[in-house]
Image (cartoon, rainbow, N blue to C red):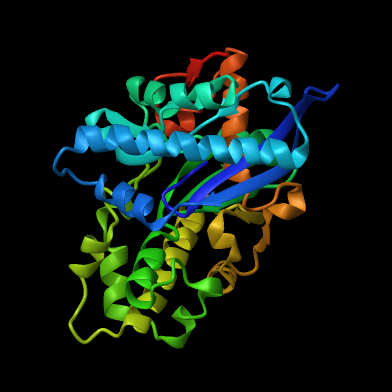
Length: 360
């Protein structure tokens, strides 16, 4: 998995077993991560907008990603002492550079054919396109996995993945699953931090906590029409980006105050989504990079008190492994010729088998 945070690649080795009661058991055996270098990050960022020679540049950076994905996979197998022949498949999300379901397309790059060649392992990729072809949003795809491994027969749970974008999986007992993107997660906070401090992220939200919330700015950010849309809905850098943020700033806004406001923006947009679409939530479990931001978690606990908020580690999967494990599960679904989407989440016309398979 490499997501909208553009921090690097997470490879997760996952074993799935079907229990006698037909429940699915998911065991993360090991994880391995590799960071993006600065040149790769900048090129991926630039490809979110039209530019010179972008078709060739997209193909070349897709090859770079495939090589980095292969390094992550091979490093994971080496540290785990697992032979590639023991692996059923690699589920490769690829790197999103455009996501425009309202126009009927989404683009995730990574050259899955090259990844299969470099690893000798079957690769399943391009998970989102089939759902969009069926008039869905193509995202989020993780709620089906969340239900399979985190659902509880008697407790209403909401799983919140805070990556570059934040998304919710509402797992109410006896009810249809609700899943959708709530808005920016770490994406704007990370971009603003790097712009003003040179660091890729604000560790634990420490820099943000040196500032004050700019109420005027927070109100403007929360007034975006995306937040009034009902699920199903998804978003990305196409809507929420640094230029959009700058259009709402005043010249005298202090950088640390903007950062504090962006943290509040993420917290409020998530809390508002829970209160509006998951009012019966009894337990919330966090995953993704945002689960390490203690200031953000504290703000969420304040806004959503007295709901219990804990990391997914408690449920058996580390916060940094959940999303990659989800695409391992989606690859498994593809090989089993089983649906991977939830029409109630994405808005697709029906259940669909997702993914393109590059067999080895």
